[in-house]
Image (cartoon, rainbow, N blue to C red; front, top):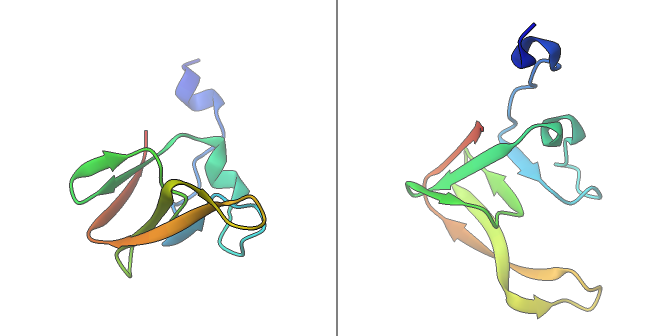
Length: 85
């Protein structure tokens, strides 16, 4: 058997996804596989949250942290594509 057939089928990628488990947009089944995010034709490795239909991603703003110890996020607008690696 090949490695591809032994793995569980990949769930469809949602329109809005967050890596924060406390978020209502967090889907744990998606994170069992490697995900890629392409923003304005450039692969990004630092994406915390995205929305394909609205065309934005959220990324950390340097090393700044909020009062709860989470990174401060900035929203960047542009063309967003998501895919399984």
